[in-house]
Image: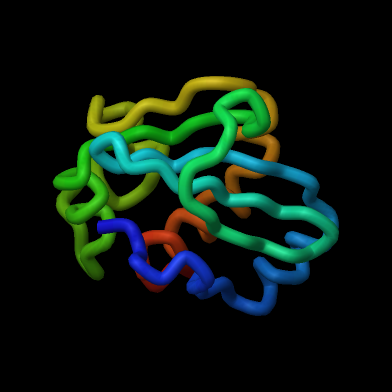
Length: 119
């Protein structure tokens, strides 16, 4: 369910403004397929494979979980990355302080990666 177009990351203007203050790299894995989201100097990019040692944290879920997450009205437990983790549908590993410190942006980036409208 990952966007095929790696250059496409739809972010709302408020999230783009927040990105100006971030220097962050994290991985999103869907059934073994990895994307690296990089935020540097206000520019957000999504690329394919990357070095596991360079990103701060990894968010991992099966493709079926991301497919449910991507729906406009997902089932309970799939509507939010925190809900997915608490329900056992996803895992987050790595520097948890950076994950929680930037949670608002991470949620918006995940919505962009999976083509979901996020507010």
